[in-house]
Amino acid sequence: MPDTQEIQSIIFAAIDELNVQREADRQVEKSLDTKLFGKDSDVDSLDLVNLIVSVEAGLAERFGAAVTLADERAFSRKSSPFKSVHSLLAYIEELLGEDPT
Amino acid sequence: MVVFSSRLDRSYHENLQKLLFFNPNQAQVAPEILRAIERYGEPRIAVIDDRLRVALGSPTEVQTLFVLEADQPGARLVGVVVYTREEDTLVVVYVALDEAYAARGMKAQRLLFLRIVDELRSVARRIKGVGSLTLFCGGGVARRIRVR
Image (cartoon, rainbow over all chains, first blue to last red; front, side, top):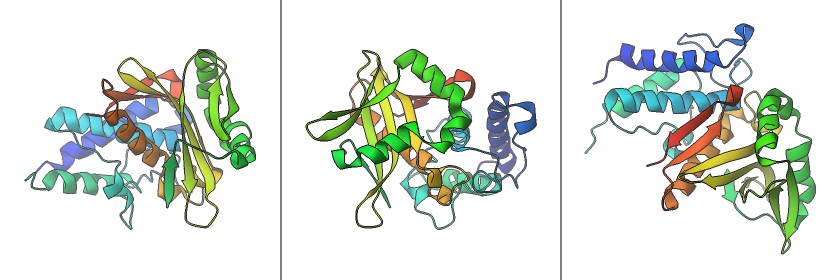
């Protein structure tokens, strides 16, 4: 089972990458509570795509397996895994914890 | 529910025009749009065989993917993506989303842009010799997304 801290650091590294492209007063907070879309979020559609593909790349690099986060499985969930950093982390843990067989 | 189509009837001309040229969200990504115009030319709407297509003011041959909201009768146009092939990658040239589907819109939870990326990955996977999708993110940074 992958370590939660390790996954969190991959997500935070993706946020760091995103923040490089944003102005100093529009930085995305590295917190589990950070909202990734919706009225309370400062993350726009392009940022979210950027963040998700960056996390996918980080997971592939760290765990050596291609992990697709943005697919029908995620979209069809009643509660979106992309709602916040916390829900994204939980979703990744779930995916990585699954038996590959 | 949203559906993707490479074809769009000419009756959607006004909707497409609004989405492409009078979209309130465009101000947020103005630098990216200007960079795309510099590189690929301005987009324009073309009518070919009673179907709408987006063409560019450059010789670049592009494909268009339309996104329609099919929840109600009379599907509403809610997104358009223009992309082109450059060697082993599909490059996303323009994306326009209906305001309701933007990050802070009423339908943000439907994650339309991510769905578009997922659809484009499927398109890319079906094309022989294409191994990635390229998106231009903030600051003109090109991000390659592996599709295989």
